[in-house]
Amino acid sequence: MGKIFFRKGMGIGIIFIFIFLNLTFASAEDIVKTQGKIMELDLNKNTMIVHEKLFVWDLNTIIYNEKGSPIKIDHLKPKIWVYIEGIEDRTNKRTMMIKIYLLHKYVDKKERHLYPFMQ
Image (cartoon, rainbow, N blue to C red; front, side, top):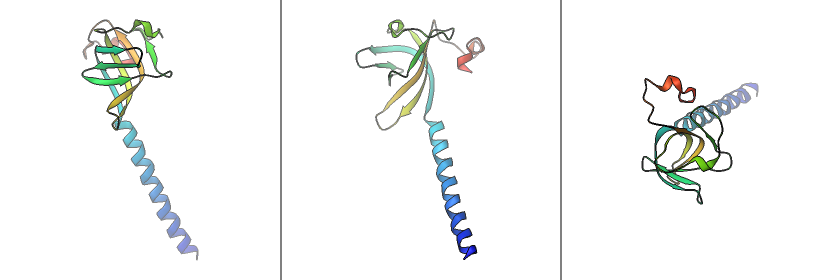
């Protein structure tokens, strides 16, 4: 009886480990980090288009300036450079933004060390 319980317990344990690892790796793939110009902005619908991709925000989304200080949503405007961290929602073909950083220009690899949030 003890051997059967041990075998069933091992099987269940292996299944849980597989499911946990699968969920962990899936969520890591869905994290999006990108920078670009705001092509379109709709403050009423909480949406913007960057790189022809739809991004949305909610009350939990935090907007920062280039120094990392929180700012109000009023600073968002079309044609402004932004750096976005979000979670991709593949079923709805959009990305829920967690953090938005306003930038003065495109930041290339040589300059990223000046912006700690891009590390």
